[in-house]
Image (cartoon, rainbow, N blue to C red; front, side, top):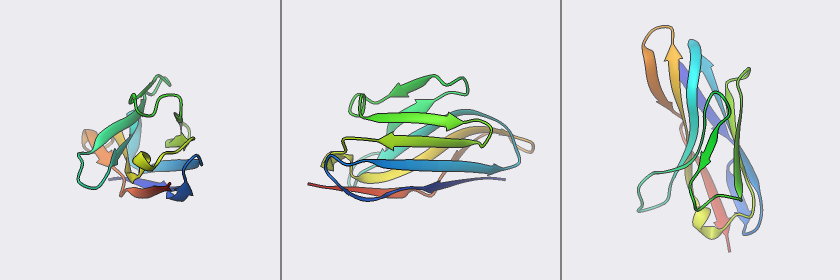
Length: 120
């Protein structure tokens, strides 16, 4: 089994910054992509940013130039640096990883979610 544990959410004023972390642990052979999604109240979950095992990144248009995704492959950890935060960034942020483990092969895993609230 694989677990994803997130940290770093909280309350911040508009224009501020937060850094989210997500650490994967368990019977991991390799991790393909690692992503951050978010879900605001009454809205569908949306992809925020993706980073491949080779470090190739992709961002939602709404966060380009403000958010930066990175990963530490040795620590199986992905980060999301969020700058110039806006009230519309308020959501529960979820970490996702495509993991190849020793038991099940390729499996999608999700973190428990961390609340980010941006006040105006």
